[in-house]
Image (cartoon, rainbow, N blue to C red; front, side, top):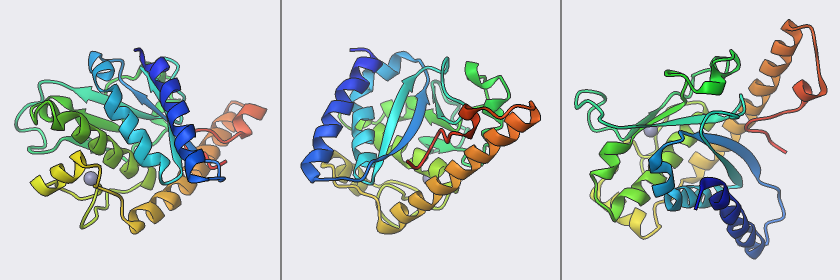
Length: 227
Ligand SMILES: [Zn+2]
């Protein structure tokens, strides 16, 4: 199954999930581009679990495979292999919440050039955690890092998905789908999404102004927009 088929399937599943909960509020759409990498096909199940976690807090991740055609306001994720042992020892991934989207609107962004990613995942380290845990850990690591970007900060929680460091108990909770976000995490997420949407809007207007054009497109909020 390719990622686009997968995305449609997940969309249908999530739509069913939301309607089952009787949710009437439209979710916030967050476009996320993930490297066009062989691993992406292997981790499709993990991406669906990440989607599910976000859907429960009113956020719908719109996955895009690869960086060609990736919208300027999207979150970009790179998967790393052969991570040197001395590079952020013990870390599974890191986010650059402060990496401005200016980088992505400079023209280089459409190719996903090195250094223009919001999130880098040390996929080799996750894979070493074993066949059973790796997909679930990947889902939680992605969730954790995407939340950092959306919150616009690197604050951690004492428990749950936003902990700075996971323990064996956390791994067990992940496998049982019991590792969650705290209320404070969700509040910060909502505040961050609103601020990000405004920033993206302002940036687009600024760029359009520099070019001397203000199009209808530039006035429309994209990226992590609050609908
Ligand atoms: Zn973190």
